[in-house]
Amino acid sequence: MSIFISVVFPVLLVFIIGYGIQKWKKVDIKPISTVAIYVMTPALVFRTFYEAHIDIQYIYMVVFSLILLFSLIIISKVYSRIKNYSTSLESGLILSTAFMNAGNYGAPIILFAYGEAGFAFAVSFLVLQSIIMNFFGVYYAARGMAGIKVAIKAVCLMPATYAVIVALLLKSFDLTFPTNLYRTIDMIAEATIPTVMIILGMQLAQIKWGNFEWDKISYAVVVRLLISPLIAWLITLAMPLDALLAKVLIVSAAMPSAATIVIYAIQFDSRPKLISSVTLISTLISILTITILLSIL
Image (cartoon, rainbow, N blue to C red; front, side, top):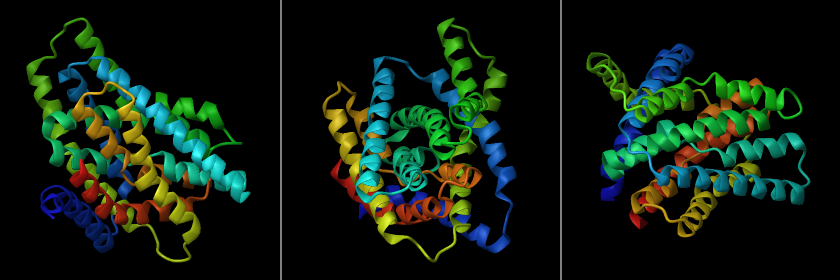
């Protein structure tokens, strides 16, 4: 109970505030999301990579992410074949199970649970997941349409990608960023996490209840909240990971379905109602599952 009160509840409360504001004022989320994506997140990402000590653990993080991704994709492919689902439904299940909400849910949970050291890993994982999501997520959402071309373009248009590159170049050439400009980035970075948390609450408020495909939702929720962290734990056992990083990766793998994927599903008409319902239900159930997982870890 203490973990719920000290870690999960503060995060949940911010989501509830965003949810309440959206229900009350019917705010247009797009301008806020645009600021978060193009200004705030790049500032947070730049600060994290500029200050981080990059070592072999970050390579392990990349390997971990790819193994987890392809494991989850294979599970959904096999399940879809067994059930004789259409390609469209298979893509919908992959989208709702293979991509977790490592940003506006996972990062704040890890910040409260493991402090700044864990948070630095969480932001790095957030960037990596964003790149993976923008490539593979777009590919599966647009499969049979624009596919890989659109996926590559999505990654190239992601501002956080360039924030990482600039930060790593400065570190590589041992260049110091001007202090006065860095203070600006620092201020924006500090506001990023609460802003994206409120945005998630607002996004959840827009998902409509009713006519849920419970059999498919149940499968997706079990894979996302239970099987995914289990696979993550097994991967961490097989890799020489830092103990804190291992915990961060397992908790991140237990996050609910990514809200960003709903946008792709709508854009490419890839079972958007199913994916949005999985996002909503997995987010609600994750309040319990994440509390239990943090207690175990």
